[in-house]
Each structure stands twice: as structure tokens, then as C-alpha cells.
Image (cartoon, rainbow, N blue to C red; front, top):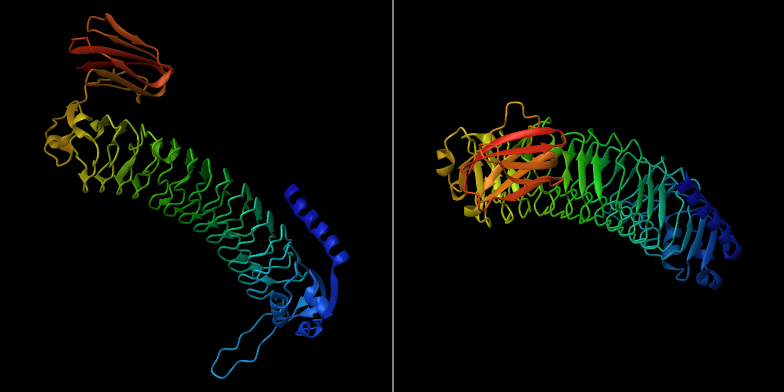
Length: 496
């Protein structure tokens, strides 16, 4: 309500300001040219009454170079059909419509639109300098590029009467900070390059966010997505300032690179399981939380190409538990130190883990001897000989040791044995060289390392979700590891 009032008050102030200094003319369709005295040609402020058509807009655009303030609030727009030369299609300009390119690049600093206006056609108001503008509730459609490049426009309200508007409507409006939209679809490129946009209000009826709709909106840190949204177009929020995004279960599709190159995006939550395009989170270095990855109860996921490429902050501790396949370069340059391969993982595409130079351990024990198929150069850039590949403790390692690319890892069977009453099924403990690693889904309160007789060899209280203990200097082959978490205690018998 406050936003609407501010727009309303701005339009009132504008209305009051124009008539005091404005030159006033009463016109009929096509008559403005005949009224062009020197005074009219040199005026910077003009109020028209009566009726005009496309010919009069041509005069306003081309023959009044000093015009900066224009009041059309008491004007009606008549239809116009210019004479068509032989063999040429006749143009037709509809009544009640602001014609295509009508005031394109005019540089108007103030504009009042006709009270009974029905539509704003393509690029009709692009390239003007007004700070605010009130769109009458009689308007039902707005054409593509209608306000493109209006670099001083700071706020806009699209009323509910507008049933459709075209692509790039407010693209490159550098100063646009607030927008309220009441239509059911947000077309492609609507706010592309609106670098000052900080506040967007979307209607409950919105079903579609088009491609590039918020691309390059670097000041947009948050947005509330309506519960009935069905799709997010490709690159919809690419290179925006979003810090988090939450999509409702109604969303069935997310387009290619929808949230790519967002340097501040830290959290992404999907309530449903939409069809995902390539590179949705491509090079989002701040991303640390993606709930659909760790949701074991959801439908199996196929990671598209480049899905998490460059997401150096995403550790994926349980990230592949419900994943069926990884697309090309899906985790390229990810900075995870540990990766868990779920029991259904069947395929890793070309370069899927390329550049994961911080990787220390891959847990493949849930796969047994079902070695996933690989594309080309899946592990390019990884020092595989120094990465532990942990296989099932009760299965032979032959299948992995004979598999192309997999065989380059340091392969050994899991040695952790959960006690039957272990309350924390997501607690893990394993050796990688002389280092004992422990990880849990809840905070670890204490880790105790004992010899088989029960003598305590080492104790650590990490108050964290993972812990590492250097066991250099201990020569025993078998260790008992007791892990105390907020949820209970788990015991492991480890062979080193």
C-alpha cells in the first residue's frame, strides 16, 4: 500500500506541476502540425486536449526539439490508417493505443498519459528521462521495449488491468529501484540490466518468470516467489545479487543457467523436484546450501551439465545419495574435500569432477561392486593417487581396480563397522593415511580413539560436524573409535 501511495503522490505532484508553466493547445487528429508557431516549437512544456493520432505523435517527436514535459491526460487517441502505396501493406494504428515508437528517445522528464489509454505499443516510451510515470488502469497491454533505457525511472507499478506485456519492457532502466507487477507472466528480459532494482513485488497469480527477466540485477538481493509459479526461464536471475532463493513445489521447470554467476547466492531451496536445465548454479562461489541435493526422500535426481561447476563453497557432504547420474562438468572446480557416492549412481559424464583439486576421499561403499560408467576425463586435474576411494568393507575391490579411470585412485575397503545400536546412521569414521576422519550430520561433541583393550589413545572435542585426528606415532592396526554427538553415541572398529 505504501508503495502504491508513493506512486500516486508522485503522479499528483507531476499533474500539479505541469499546467502552471505549460503551453496548452486543443487539437483534433492530424492538426498539431498546423498549430506549430515559433512559441510552440520552442516550448519545453506542453499540455494537449482534444484528440490526436499517429501524425501528431510524429510532430511531437520530430518537430518540438525543446519539449521536456508533456501532459496528455485529457487527450484521446484516434485510430489512423495512412495512405498505402500500390503493392504495399497498409499500416494501421489503433484507437486508444500509444503508437509504436511514439515518443522514442524524446528525453521527456515528465509525462502524463491519456486517462483512457488502452495500450502502450512497442518502444513507445523508450529512452525518456522521466523519474516516475503513472500507467492508467485502462491499459490492458504494454508492448516490447516500451520503457527500454528510461535511465532515470525509479519506480513503476503495472496495474492489474494489464493482461500482457512484451519482452524487455524495463530493460536497462538503470535507476529503477522498485517495481510492482500484477500480471500472470513476467516476459523475457523484463528487468535485464536494472542494476538499481532492490524491491520487486510479484502477484499471487504469477505463473512464469521469463528468460533473462532479472539478468544483471546486481542490487536485487532477495525476492519472494509466489506459491503458484510454474516455471523459471533460462538465465532468469543470471549475474544478479540474490543471496538466497526458495522455489515452491508448483515449479515444474528451471531453465539453463537460471541462477548462474550470482556471486552472493548462498542458499537455494526447492520444495518440489522440477526439471532442471544446464548450469543452474554455474560458478556461484558463495553457495553452501542446496536442499534438493541432501533430500534423501525425494525422487532420484539427474544432475544436468555444469549444474554446480565452480561452486567452490558447496561441500556436498551427502550430495550424491539420491543422484542417478552426473552430467558433463557437473561438479567442475568444486572445492569439496569429501564426496559420497550414493547407491543408485550409475553414470558420470565428461569432466564431471574435473578440477576438484581439494578432493581427499570418495566414499563408494554404498555402491558395492556396481562401478558407475564414466565419460571422458571425468577426474581431470585430480591427483588420483593421493585420493582415497573407499569401497564396501565386505566386497572385493577387483571391480574398481580393473575399471578405467577409477583404478587410478588409492582404493581400499571401508573399515568402519557400525555397532548394531548406533543411533546416528550418518556418522562416518575412516582412515586416510595416518589421519583419522570423522563426520556426522549433527554436531560432534567428542571423539575418543582407543586400542582394542579400551585404553584411550586420543581425545578430541571438535564442537563441529567433522574432525580429523593425526594418528602418526601410533602403530596399532586395530582401533576402537567412539563418537559422541548431540544425538547419541556411535562406535567403530577400524583397521589401519
